[in-house]
Amino acid sequence: MPLLAFETSCDETSAAVVHRGQVLSNVVSSQIRMHAEYGGVVPELAAREHLRNLLPVAREALLEAQVSPDQLAAVAATRGPGLPSALLVGLKAAQAVAFVLRRPFLGIHHHEAHLYSPWLTGQPPAADFSNFQPNVSLIVSGGHTLLVHVRAELDHCLLGSTVDDAAGECFDKIGKLIGLPYPAGPEIDRLAEGGRPNAYDFPRPMIDVPNDDFSFSGLKTSVRYFLRDHPDLLLDSQRLRDLCASVQAAIVDVLVTKTLRAARRLRVRCVTASGGVTCNRALRQKLTGACEREGLTLLLAEKTLCTDNAAMIGILAERKLGLRAWEGSSDADILPNWTMG
Ligand code: KG4
Ligand code: ZN
Image (cartoon, rainbow, N blue to C red; front, side, top):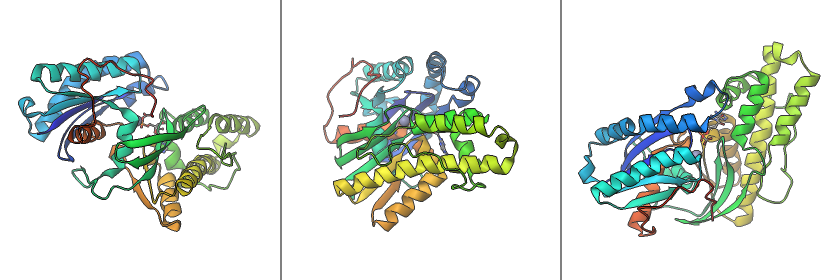
């Protein structure tokens, strides 16, 4: 029987219906335009938008999947980490639906769900875990930059994370310095296409530090000083493109180098990546090239599944349900700072 999942941890209101590893529907309503006006996500506005959008989005997901509520086997929602007021909307709505239908409720860890989104392929997406391999997984978004060792299905440990800004945050903050609208990552990606990645030499923070942590705030500061010393640069479109390409190259270089180093050290033969920054074309290209050179299998989340979505929450919940790897928690509370084991 199908499962209904909600995801409301940040600024995407999403509902999905999954069944036997297949995504029957995955409706995502993004609030990005609303937050762009403020240059970042405003938590209370996000929660209010989730409240407004969640039921229409859920209704659409059920309609698209051609599933009626009484056919559902279970209901799942993101329990954390995320914005407290935003999480609360999705979690409490899911628990209410589960209670009314007398079905189990599953509270899902947002990052754990990201770990399995690269395994969703095809159109409509479906998960095939029959050839699952131990892997090193890079989760890279506006809020997080994590490296995780996935030893087996549902068995993973956090290797490292950012000690300050996330990689997406670095793209966004540097974009703001350049005068680009929020979120600046996709715009830097676009401008970088016509630029030279080695035009300017920016630092690759912590690239040589022998651990799996990241740091990106120093890179942002160095771009700030660079712009102070080269005030005319932004007036020249080619130099602006060179700047974007050089900044992007620095971020991508750190992400790829540290991911591959962890894979080598842990002797895994597979690398996966997900999260909004995984849409970045240079990151996708560099990871592809590096994995090919080392004979590693690379699974990149489909671009539509890189950003936050309920399909990944549903797929993981269904897997947990099937493997009986979950605890009943119909009155579970949100866990905004839930860390990964
Ligand atoms: O996963 P996501 O939608 O939301 C969370 O942060 O949880 O990721 C959004 C982040 C933003 O920082 C955005 O600038 C970045 O992903 N991003 C990109 C690209 N597309 C989205 N960064 C670089 N290149 C892109 N093409
Ligand atoms: Zn996410």
